[in-house]
Image (cartoon, rainbow, N blue to C red; front, side, top):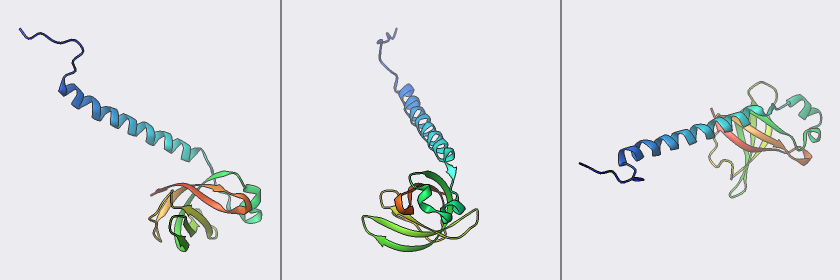
Length: 129
């Protein structure tokens, strides 16, 4: 007869539970992040062009394609020219190095942006699609 020690977990059970916990955590993180992205209002290009400072302090969702890199400062970030996917004229956006360090012309992104004082559009999060 093989007595069981109470409280001892079988290795097979651990081999199953650890990946399961990792997968569930990853899914919860992705769903939460997706909800945040979709809870933002779309960026209003017409309102921004009319008066950029009226939008200061607000967060928006902007789907855009990188058109050109205007400037890059190592350790600080880059200014990009982007084309909104829903049409309209190009915009300049600032992407801090802490958000992304490898961006290429032609790539498309879902961007969570913040309009700073004086109308600067700063990217706070971006996801390539």
